[in-house]
Image (cartoon, rainbow, N blue to C red; front, side, top):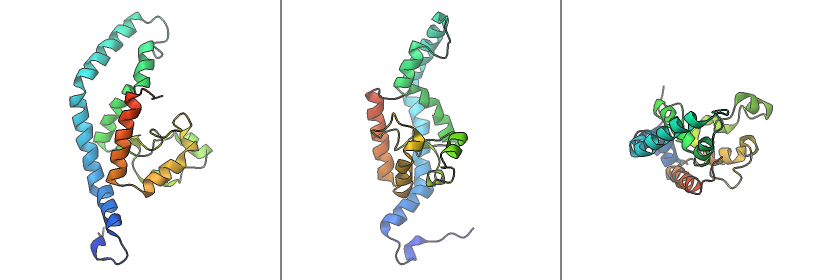
Length: 172
């Protein structure tokens, strides 16, 4: 594979070089740093959730997949945290377009969409948008814009906005 040094190519701006450097090297480093650090920091939360789930399962006579506790965990997006393992493995990124089921992507003609040029993310532009209650396939323009404007600053803004969504308990 031939690597091209963008520093010497006329017409390539500093912003484009930075975006390429971030996409190619730093984004994965940020993913790993967060995916390894968050579980350590959130260990007390994991212990409380684990005990709560055990207690809730012991009390549930209905379908154990739909408990009051489960609805709270979903509302606070705590059910998303196990995906950190996928970030560590490199299958996902902390920030990126939300993965969509293949059948839905085929049905809506978005299999070849630019959103697939980057790793799918635990959070992304759609998750922090004002149209969050809508469907992913109705908001692919947000993903296309994200892929086009992918920078460190964009990812940090989305991460900070994700914390606001979680704190406000507006997850789904």
